Structure formats: structure tokens, C-alpha cells
Length: 214
Image (cartoon, rainbow, N blue to C red; front, side, top):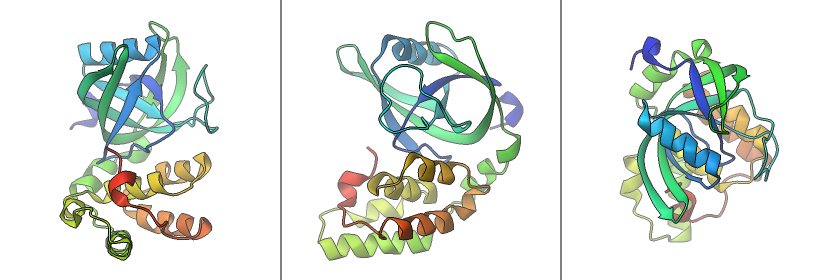
């Protein structure tokens, strides 16, 4: 992936959870007509979409205020889950900062973005971040709960996928999730998440099989 080939203007999809980080694949549902149009237009083009988190929880309608750092995703699988509802899988590539919003097409929002702060994302993902402390904590919790989850699945997950899975499972606020998104280097995500986990009572008593985004 060459930075110069990435779009400077991206269609914006507000997504509260799960958190899309480089090296992860997360699902989202397009329900509103404008977001169905967004997915349609993205697939007709290069497949790129900008994922930004709303600043407030539970904002399901209207045009919520969005954080200005998000992640560029590329749409992979996409199918109609229910009539008039698309289930989309997006792969996180690189983070960006919004410079300004511009008039959107067919009702959805668009933004001019800059990748300069996050040029190291691609190389760090390629280094296959391990985050061994987080993996071991999850492994121990699964064994303690005697979950039927196949631990070998976790071995094949990227480090950022482990971060996304845990962030999805614990009670982080939108501001705390955004701290993960805006961490300067992906290699620092483990340390930041461990600090956040201390604030919400540590590793939750969860069944990872139901907590990991699917």
C-alpha cells in the first residue's frame, strides 16, 4: 500500500463500536438510506471508507459530532443481512486526521483527511505486534471461565485485533476508546489499554467467543 495512492477525500461512516484499528477487520451494519448509498458508492469505486467514532454514546440518528482521528477501512465482504440492511466487513489500513468536512453525496458525510501523523501504522502492522501481556491475560481468563472458545484462534489474531476484542468487551467510554485510536504508535496500544483496564476494574469476566467482533 502506497500512501500516495490513498484517497484524500473519504466517505465517513460513524461507528461507535467495535473500534476499527489498522490490522483489524470489524463488522458494521448500514441501515439508513444514506449509508446504504455510501457503501454502494464505495464499492463502485476503490472500496475505501473512513470510520470515525461519535463523541457521545448512543447517537443513532442525525449527524453526531465526530472525533477527528479515525481509521481508513477497505470494504471486503458485504451482503444483505436483512431486507434493506447491509452487513459490511471493513479492514483497517491506516489512521487519519480529519482536516475538514466537505459536502457529501447522496446524504452521507465526507471529509478531507491527512495521514501524515500515522505513516508508521503500515510498517507496525507488518511487524505483527504480539502484545503478549494482553494475550496471556485473555488466555488465563478463558481457562478460568472454562470457556469452550478455541484458544488456537487467538494465536492467529493480530495484536491490534486483541486490543479491539478487549476494548469491545469492557466498559470503556467513547473518550477512552478514542485514546486507543489516537495512541501515537500502534506498538504503545498494549500499555495504553492496560492502563485503561485498571480504571474499569481489570480484565472482565467475559467469554471471549462472544466478545470478539465477528
